[in-house]
Length: 81
Image 1 (cartoon, rainbow, N blue to C red):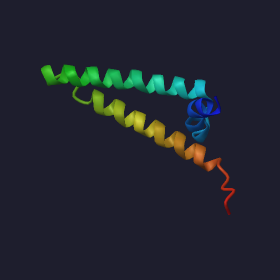
Image 2: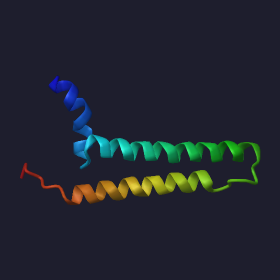
Image 3: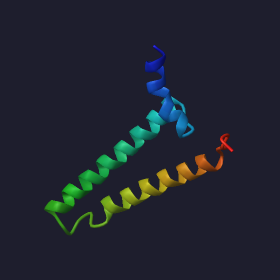
Image 4: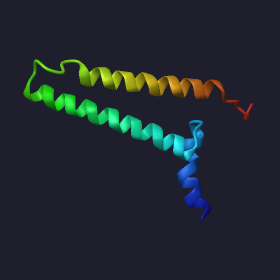
């Protein structure tokens, strides 16, 4: 049972979140990625539409992820020293 619990909590804890916070963040990213995919599909058929939408969403998500990671790492203390 501990392995199962650890499987659900280890990674979220590593990024400073609870399981539910991590799930909410991941679902939010998934929704935005679906929107980016839809924009790319529209652009594929109608190249004059959504010319920057998908790339702007992906850039925004990347910035958000890197910023969150940097903020989490800044609050971390290395106990190995």
